[in-house]
Length: 434
Image 1 (tube, rainbow, N blue to C red):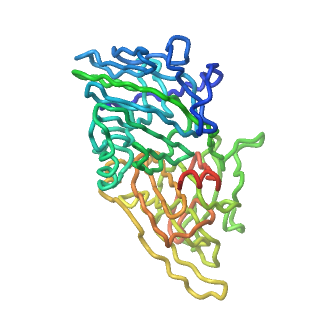
Image 2: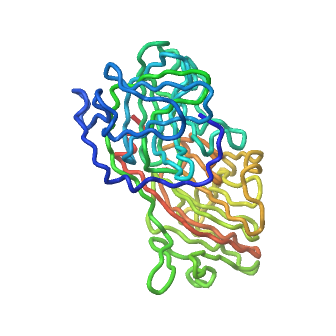
C-alpha cells in the first residue's frame, strides 16, 4: 500500500486482445487457467511497472524482492484485463515486507503508476486479505481500507497464517461484490462500484526490505458486468430508456438539457412528488446517479420500492439526497395498502452524518455521486466513491423499483445525470453467498 492520490484514471482496455498462452490449472479446478507456467516471465504476459524492485523466476515461483530505500512501489502486471473472476495463488513471505495482489487495476500513463483494488499481504498481520485502494482512495478521508471487516473475522483468518511458509490466497470479484479468503477462511465480504474490469498485479512495496514468492497463479474467468443507462441520447436528443415520468399529467416537471442533464422542477403548489421510476423491478443490483441539489425539502435514489396510491407514489427504501449530513443515509418510506390503510415506514435505518460532511461537495453548483448496492439482506450506500452505510437487515424489501425523486410540496429543483443500474443475476448471487 502507499498513500497516494490518483490524478488520472486510465484503464488499459486496449490490452483486451492481448494473446497469452495459458494452460489448464490443477485437477479438480474446472474452468481455471494458469497465468504463470513456472518457467519464464519474458513473453509470458507479465511486465514490470512502477518502482525498482526486481522479479525473477526461481524453482517454479515468481520471486519479487525490494530494493531498499527506493521511493516507489513496484508491480509485476499481467497485461490482460479480467472482469468477474475467481483468482487463486500461493504466496510466501521469505523476508518480511509489505505486498499485495492487484486486481481490476490500471496504470497511469504519465508516471507508470499502478492503481486500483489490492488484496493486502502483510506478513503475520491481521490485515492480510483486506482490500486497499492502491494509489487512489486508500488513506483518504481518514480511512485506510475499503472494507470494514469485523475484528473477530480478521483474528480468525490470520490465525491460519503460516509465517515463512506457503499460504493460499483467493479473490472473488462478481459485479460489485468483492470477497477474499486466506488459507480457505473467509475474510472480506464487501461491495464497491468503481471498477468492474482491470489488470492483475503482484506488488513489492517500497521500504527497507521484502522478499515474496508466488506460485500456482490461476484464474477462472466469469465474464464482465456492465452498467445499463437510463438516460440515452437519440437522434431527437436525450430521452429516458426503461423508466417513466410521474405524475403523468404534468410531464413538464422533467426536461433534459442538450448535454444530458435531467432537470426536475416544480413549486410548492404541487403536493405530489416528481418521480422517474424504472419499468422493471430489481432484487439484487447496483445503481448510481450524479446530482446537484438545487433546493427543496430533499430528494432520493429510491430502491426496492413499490408503487402505492399516495402523493409520493413509492414505498420502500431511499438512498437519501438531502444537501446535508444525511446524504447517502437509508430512509424507509411509508405507504398505504390496496384498501387505503396506512402502512408505516421504518424511518432512518442507517446514516453517518459526520463522515458525510467530510466527503460531500457543498457548493450550490457542485456535482455529487450517490450509489447503492443491494444483494439479499446486505445493502451498502456510497457518496463520491466512499462507503457511507453498510447494513445487513432481514426486514428489507427483497425487490422493487429504482427511481429518482423530486420532493413535493416545496420549491424544488434537482439535476441528475448518468443514472445507471447493474443487475446481479441469480447465478452471480449464488457465488457471492457461497
